[in-house]
Amino acid sequence: MSKKILALYYTQSGQLEEITNNFTKPLKEAGHTVETHRVRLVNEYPFPWKTAPVFFDAMPESVQGIPQQLQPLQLNESSYDLVIFAYQPWFLSPSIPATSMLHDERITAVLKNTPVITLIGSRNMWLNAQEKLKKLLQAAGAHLVGNVALADRGNNQLGVLTIFHWMLNGKKERKWGILPMPGVAQKDIDHVEAFGAVVAPYVSKGSYHRMQEALVQAKAVEIRYNLMYIESKAGIMFKVWSRLIYGSKKRKALLVAFKYYLLIALFVAAPIILLIHSILVRPFLYSRTKRKFEYFLGVNYNKE
Image (cartoon, rainbow, N blue to C red; front, top):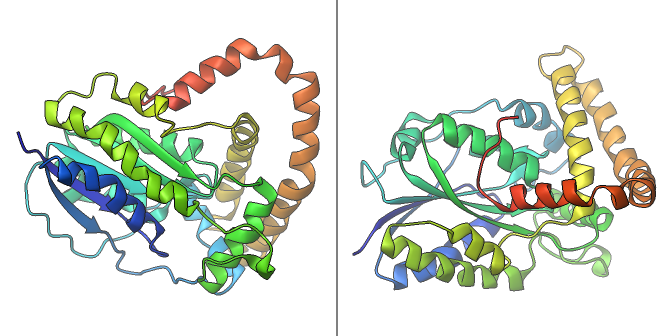
């Protein structure tokens, strides 16, 4: 039986639009009706961002989860059999547009009691953002049944250089002609269609039992230990900085300080801390690490 599917996404560069379209292609081929909407803000963020200060200015609101008003969204149905929620993390949190979607009454109305699959297009760290999104979905009464996460597979430090090059000039190209391409690799964007094919039979049955296990086996979600560890520490500091900056009269000065803190943390502190942790601590955390991997690969939400 044909199912009604709603796919929502926000994009600046067009990357997440391509990911969403590729993912939903097998669902359409299976005979399901897919209604796709590109969500926009009333006050849009610029792309390219032009300058780093403009980009960093979005940090406090991203981390604090402050929503903005969306442009009018006209949905064709009052309810759907499945919602595909595609989003990007900003500063280890759901992007402001993603958070805004989950505070919009039109969207939360169709999310209530509805299965949801999250579709993530990230630089490389998405665990904290997904935990925050799980909480928002739960508050909306939605049922998270699946997650697909695409990320830049390259070196973390090089990824910072390439993503800034892309964000600030708007061109997805090799910086200096030698660094890796920024963002999610094109082969991964193309391959996301295979994950849609994994999902299709579950949609047809109307039952999502063990679907996430099938997605994990298909490598729709992968976790790198080093990034998980770094993100767990960075997430705490981002909260501290966001609280310090949000609403402060010294916002501009504090954002400059945060920018330099972040660069030092990424290029100097993180490699040293990670090396020490890998030698002295990680070997004794096998069971704990295994539990964390199982949790983050799944769709359950642990409020703690």
